[in-house]
Image 1 (spheres, one colour):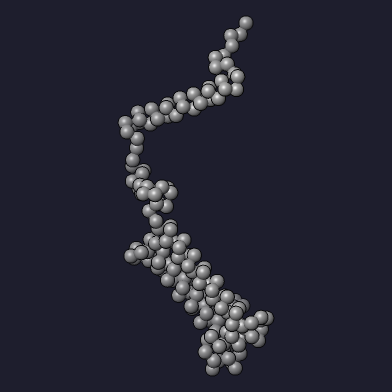
Image 2 (tube, one colour; image 1 turned 90 degrees about the vertical axis):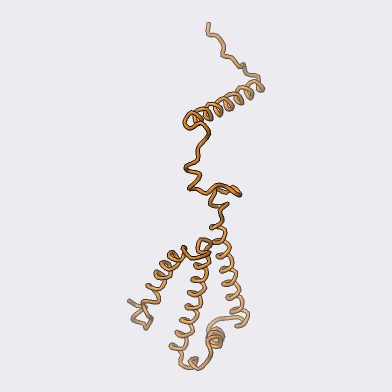
Length: 174
């Protein structure tokens, strides 16, 4: 209640991020939606909307900033309140936001890559096809694969124990 009572619009703080999430999820069906392009566009739009809301709030709190452009409002407010060079700090913040947006786009692009969806193998089969695919011979093929793996494992252990000086056959108990 404190935010809305202080003059903030509650829908921009609470409802807008929820709507943005719903829109991003529903945009997956669009072209390049699986690669995350609509989500990146939505994040950029939310960032611009945040900047716009900050500059409007600065103008509302300090009426002397109202006739200035949004960039000049930010510069003036930074110079009045924060230490350090204004242009350097605002440029650094913009650069960090740009790098974050690029990293987000690359991460979402990689998540839509079929090689990632195929279990990490380049050119792997999509998950829905891998579920229906089985070894040759059906159930008998699975049993044969397990027996082969067991023989390889037991053989490797016997060879390892023989190399260490252990007998490969058990001793007779007297």
